[in-house]
Length: 169
Image 1 (tube, rainbow, N blue to C red):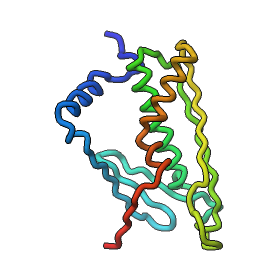
Image 2 (cartoon, helix red, strand yellow; image 1 turned 45 degrees about the vertical axis):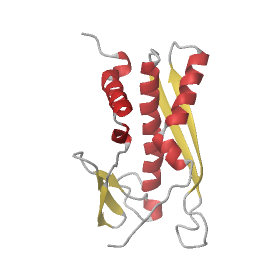
Image 3 (cartoon, rainbow, N blue to C red; image 1 turned 90 degrees about the vertical axis):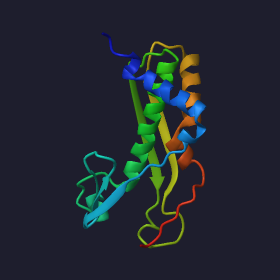
């Protein structure tokens, strides 16, 4: 038996889409993570039953460089979300992906984080370069790209103001 196109289980995706069409309330989901401090700038995130995801700061920022830092993880989350979108949309369109790489870069000024000034402690901008190797036409690739950008949950989250409530327990 051959592997599905792009190794994507479209039956599962189509099944979920069908269920949501029949029962729209199923689309309202909630996701969770728990983070534990491990000393210094080290912490680890626990998500579902997966192994903990480490986080630390580079040595130049006072950490021990034992894992990616949170702003790097944010870039990775966007890249991973886009990869899911390309795989799903390519498969739905019958496009074989031979290779897909997503390069992300963010510009961040450390003044506010270090308490040297007030302002934006986050990214000023994020740029993404998507490299797709496929036999599909440039028009098919562009249409797929437009759909992925237009439906990326992480991309949408980052590109608009999202209310964040941080309570002290």
